[in-house]
Image (tube, rainbow, N blue to C red):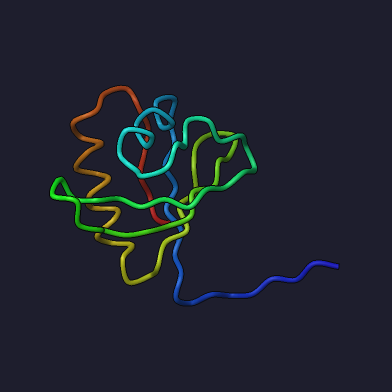
Length: 97
């Protein structure tokens, strides 16, 4: 029998779209393009100077990725991903869940 726990100190961001694997692969510290659906990896997003913006778990889904991130970093991570998204063409959305 499984169980669930509410982790109020964690939040989830969805990154979706046809180009999401390539988009994330070029931004984060883990090779996410190779992840199979249902598999996860530990990754992080760095500034261009190499400072950590946030670390998170990346879960591959059928239509993109879910990022399990510390709740205190979710807004900053969404903001950074959205800035990079605006520079990339042909891919979907970054949204908090």
